[in-house]
Picture 1 (spheres, rainbow over the protein chains, first blue to last red):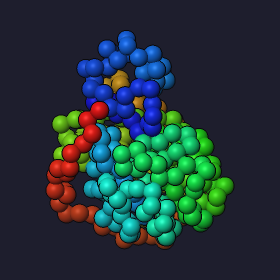
Picture 2: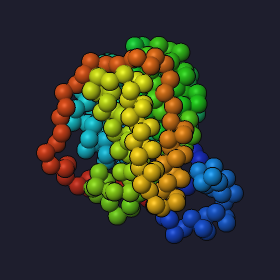
Picture 3: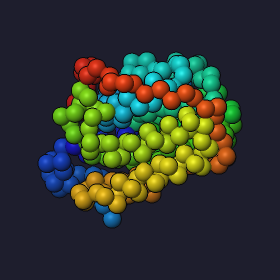
Picture 4: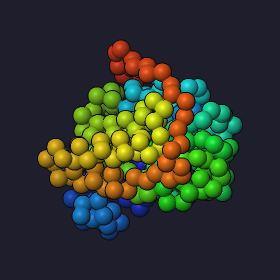
Length: 39
Length: 217
């Protein structure tokens, strides 16, 4: 599970690893967030 | 003072490590779970150290169930204190605002504090080896502060802890999270700031499982 301590984020602050691909496809904000984390 | 939210996966994971390794040696008030709320947080700010964990943004730190504990417009008495916030983005604005209000040192994160955890470890979060990779460096820095080490020394211990875990990490996502956390950790205020050393108290056995229900979404 990928978690963070963000407040009022437009992406989930707790997501199962297997759900990440679907969320990346569905949610541009989550895509941008992971793009910042994974350089 | 220590104030720990505990109501969803990330706060349960982080509070678990702090309950296991920090709370036994922190002085009252110890505001955990339902006690981690603004009325207590803002009135019980005696002592020389504030440790708080909850969801946050650049201006805001929240406690239990995202109730606001403080923001840049409403800051409790922090004069002369060292402040450690385990939260997201508070290093951007809230941290500098705390220094402006008289805190001698601040440590936090200027971006999201992010990690990989094992959702099956939720009853005994301190035993989660995945979360430990991100949370033990933070725990070690807090314990360094409680050992009387300076703001600068404690921050270096956190940075070195992240770097050591990055060096031995094989999972790309976990490694990226650790690098992101290390690179976005911030230390503000007086590098030589420190508190009076607290005794080292380690629980001989882990706490009992945390059975309180979590918010799952």
